[in-house]
Image: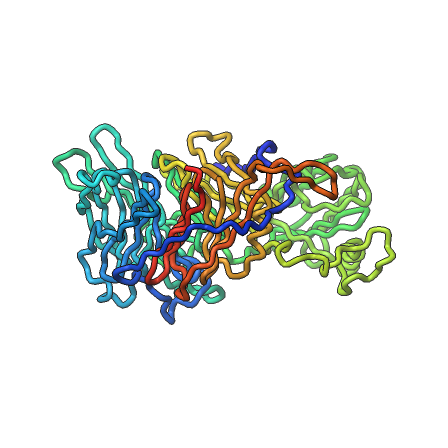
Amino acid sequence: MEMAANCSLRVKRPLLDPRFEGYKLSLEPLPCYQLELDAAVAEVKLRDDQYTLEHMHAFGMYNYLHCDSWYQDSVYYIDNLGRIMNLTVMLDTALGKPREVFRLPTDLTACDNRLCASIHFTSSTWVTLSDGTGRLYVIGTGNRGNSASEKWEIMFNEELGSPFILIHSISLLKAEEHSISTLLLQIEKEELDMKGSGFYVSLEWVTISKKNKDEKYEIIKRDILRGKSVPHYAAIEPDGNGLMIVSYKSFEFVRLGQDLEENMDEVMSEKIKVEPLYYWQQTEDDLTVTIRLPEDSTKEDIQVQFLPDHINIVLRDHQFLEGKLYSSIDHESSTWIIKENNSLEISLIKKNEGLTWPELVVGDKQGELIRDSAQCAAIAERLMHLTSEELNPNPDKEKPPCNAQELEECDIFFEESSSLCRFDGSTFKTTHVVNLGSNQYLFSVIVDPKEMPCFCLRHDVDALLWQPHSSKQDDMWEHIATFNALGYVQASKRDKKFFACAPNYSYAALCECLRRVFIYRQPTPMSTVLYNRREGRQVGQVAKQQVASLETNDPILGFQATNERLFVLTTKNLFLIKVNTEN
C-alpha cells in the first residue's frame, strides 16, 4: 500500500520580522455606518440534542455573513423570510438598503431539525445553496457585478437526506461538460460509540454535472469522508482532483451506502488485540526472547540461526521469525533452550552493552516487550529532572526547571495536535500529511477566488498565511504573508468569536461575541520622526491597533473583511467599518 508523504510547511524567512516591537494603540476614529435590516437574520440556535463541542464548532459558531470574493465589497446574508439579501458597497456615504436577489422556495420554519441555511459563491456566475433542511440548490446567477445581466435561476435542486451545511464548492468546464463539486458537512449520531461523544462528522463530496446544453444537471458522484472532529478547514482543489482538510482528528473515505454497523464492526475487529507471537525482555547486557511452542515439540522441530545483526527462527519447517536485529549481537555466545513449560527461550548477548533496544526485529510488531519493575524505576530516575510534583524543587540548581507561574495563559498551546491532509479524489487515499503540532489554526481567507482558500496558522508568536497550490506536488503550501505577533495577541482574547484578514494582507481583525472589534494593521512608515529610547535608534515604521465598539447589544452573527471595509452582522443590523481610507 502506498504511504502518504510526510511533509512540512516551509517558512519564508524574509517575511518574518524578528525586530517587531508590538502594536501601538491608535485613537484615530474609525468611520462606522449602521444599516437596519428589514427582517432578522435566519439564525438557528442549537437544539437540546446538539450538545457536543463539535455541534458548537460547526453550527453554534457559524458565520451568517457571506462575502462574494469574485466581486469587491459584496456581502450576503439569509433572513428569516427565506430571502437571500445582498449589499454591495460603492460609496460609504451613499449606502442603499440590502436588496433581495433570491427567495428560497421552501418554508424553512416547517422543518424541526433544520440547520442554518448556507451559501457558497462557486464562480462569478454560479452559486451553491443549502436551505438547512437537506436540500441542495445549484443556481446560475449571471454576472453578479452587472445588475442588467444578473438573474438568479435554479439549475438543479435535490433532497440529499439529512440536513447539512455547505463548506466549499468549485466549478469545472471541460469541453462541453460543466460540473460543480460541493463539500457538505453533517454531524450524525453514532449508536455504537460507547466511549466518545456518540456522534461522528461526515463530509460528503458531491459532484453535479451536465454533459451538454440539452441535458439536465444530475449527480454523477457522491463520496463520503468520516471523522470524529469538525474540520477547521476543508476545500476542493481547483481542478477537482483532490481535497485538503485541516482537522484535529483524521478523516478517511468510506463507501457510499455502507451500513454504519458494518463499518463499526470493521473498526472494532481491527482493535481486537492479537496475542503476541513472542515476548522479550532486556537488561543492559542481554535480551531474552520467549516463544510458546506447539504441543509435543522437540529440538529437531526447531532451527535457530544467529548472525551478528540478523536472526532466523524456523518451527516445524515453517518460517516463524526472520529479520534484521535492532543492533548487533555476539552471535557466537547467543544460545537457545526448550524450557519445561513447553516454551523456547532464546538468549541474545548485546554487542553494545547499555544500549536500550526499542524493538527486537526492525519493523516487526508481532512481539511484546516486558519491562520489570526495576527497569521502570531506573527509567523514571533518569527522567526525574524533567518533571516534579513541586513547582520549583531545587531553585539553586544550575539549570532550574521552568516555573509555570512565569507563563502567561496565551503562552500555553492546546495539547491536541492538528494535521493537514491532502486526499486524492480518484484513489481516495491520503497523499500528503503535515503534522501541525503547536501551529494552532486561526482562520481562512480567500485571497484569489480562482485558487483554494488560504489558511492562517500560529507559528511561535506570529500568524502566518499559507496559500495551497495543488499543482505543485513538491511545494504544495506557500507562505505568502505574516501578521507579526498576532498569534500571541489573539490568544489573549478570551471572548473572540470570528477572525478575518484583508485579501491584500493589509490588516487582520477579530471580533468578540458582543460589540467589540479589534483591528491589527501591518507596519507602515511614520510621517514623523520617532525614536526608541531604550535602544537609541530611530523607528521607521509602526504597526497600529484600533478598537471599534458597535452601538448594539445584539450578539455578532457574521464577520467579513475586504481590503477597505469590515462588515459585521448582528440579528437586526449590518455594520460597516471603513478600515482603509487611502483608496
